[in-house]
Image 1 (cartoon, rainbow, N blue to C red):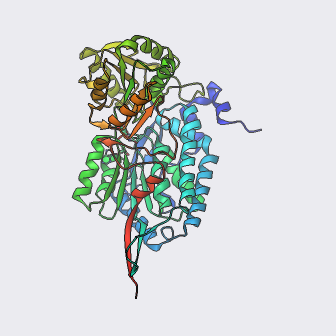
Image 2 (spheres, rainbow, N blue to C red):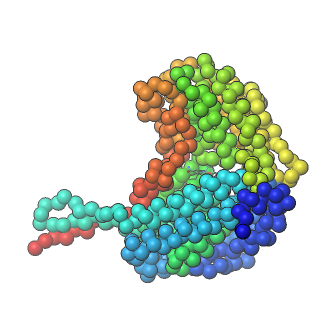
Length: 506
Ligand code: NAD
């Protein structure tokens, strides 16, 4: 009988990252035109395990020359119509097979994800990979069910309003949910008929490369899905500035999102969809009738995935009347979210992705202390003896919204608690941010729930829950959290353009 990944990893001896990496026969090259290829330059970069600091592989480091090569193949595939003009029903079949292959390789992909970016194996296996397969399947299923339009013009004409794929799409994604963020782009972009070049973050290339291979196995023709691992300043910038790339679908920081606006403006005015950072408010009104549920949601809302979540509930806005009780409950929940070996199936919080991010998070914790916030819980690096990058769940109290820890995206397990007394004050603080990705509201008053949900400027507002998600529900930001929506049928819109065909009747 074969053992499952979780059963195997339950043995501590089976959890050595280096040994696992060698067992897995890692794909370390770019995936170009249906084949593995070294970077044109022959350069590589190290792929480091966040839980041990050890280098587990050397990965092809793609740059401008690789982007030129891949864009050429992508364009050729697109113009040939081999995918772009394939019957939607046939495209559906390939995408459903692709989704099935991702599902069948859940164990392997989950392991790659955890080795690469440090999230708990339990999450990779139960959340990231299943949701990624579901996403590809959703768009595969959808594509032969969406219709074009006929305009209501006078009877002397028939005007078809067609949606056409854009052409070559660059998908540039971050390291926090490497497979999921990739499939949020690939699913709808491929379903619509585009050729896609995926550039994973340099911190997390392993699953992306494997996705390219699985896509080809499912029947995606050469050039339709290519994967270029490499750095942002090289491969990412080259895609952003390429005159023959029609669109960039980006998820990452607001800072880099702004670079893509510049690249586009300075090159071919390529279309952009930008899913950027956040500083989401989690607002607890005094009429919240379930503080236990609110505390559980707040703790997981900010500590899930080591806090490396774009919509993390990083600002807790809590009414003065319930603050002490709520904080106590959040601390109690946090005690169950201790950092540990990401490869241990029992671990609920893994390692921070790399040393740079570790230093960033610790720097913010220092800034919080210096600015006068009260360190309530945590605040330190931990498990240093492993060589990995672990930070304790950290809670600051008496934060004011003008402090750095309330204004900037930390992208680590740090919660800033801010107290309010009036509803208007809570809304004002919630909106006093450059971001607008998500928000949570806790109240038992339906009028207040509607009022606050309308008043908060964010792409997603959760009421009496947090981070609830479904592939049918759009996700994306207002303000400097970007524009364009991932997930749901609406995501297809950004990977197509409208064409009006006017037919004059005689
Ligand atoms: P990042 O912006 O540093 O990198 C994202 C991607 O852009 C990577 O592939 C990177 O290589 C590339 N890149 C970096 N510099 C570049 C440059 N100069 N030119 C072109 N490409 C460049 O982000 P990150 O650190 O990988 O991820 C964390 C960020 O992602 C956070 O800000 C987080 O909020 C955001 N994020 C947003 C969402 C969302 O849906 N809104 C989801 C997940 C993560």
